[in-house]
Image (spheres, rainbow, N blue to C red):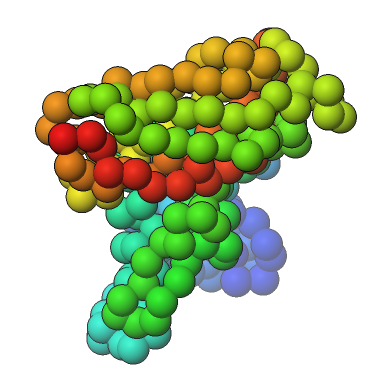
Length: 245
C-alpha cells in the first residue's frame, strides 16, 4: 500500500503511514519493480505502465506497449516489410556484424547499427516488394581505407577467389592490414566469412565454400582491419558470382 497525504507531498511505503492535517487517501498499487540504488537510482521490472531496466550500464525506462486495436494498418505493414527485407539480408551475418559494426555500436548493438545503416542506405523497391540493393549495402563500417578494385571468380569446385590491388601507401592504410571477406548465399540464407585473412599487400585470397553452394549465386564483400583489430574499413561490394558446379 502507498498512502498519499491530501495536503502535503509526503508518501509512506508498505506499513508506514504519514499523517497529515486532513484525511489521507488510500491507493492500491501493484509494483513489480526492484530499486537497487535508492530512490534516485534506476530500477528493473514493471511499475504500473513503466518498465525499467539496464543495458550496457545504461539505466532506461520505457512505457508499456499499448494495445493496438488494428495491428495491420498500411503504415505498419509497410514498416514490417522494410524491416523484413533488411532482416533477411542481415540475419545470416549476425555473428560477423559484431565485428563489422563494432565501432558503431554506440548505445545499441552492432546488429542494430547495421540494421539502421542498411535500412537508410541500401533498401530498394516498394511495398510489399522491398529488397536490399547489394552494391549499396555495408557489412562492415570504419575509417580505414577500403579495398581497391576488388574482383571475384569461381573457377574451381567449392572455391571463390578474391583479388584486389595493393593500396597500402594510401592515407592510413598499411601493408599489414588484414583482409576480411564475406560470401553471402541469399538462397540458402547462409554466409561464409574470413576475419584476419591475408595482408593487404598479398592482393589475393581464396575461400572454400560448402559443396551445397555449387551452382548458387553468391554476393561477395571485402574489407580490411588494422593489425591491432581496432579499426575497420567500410566494406566494398566485390560483386556476385555463381559458385563453380
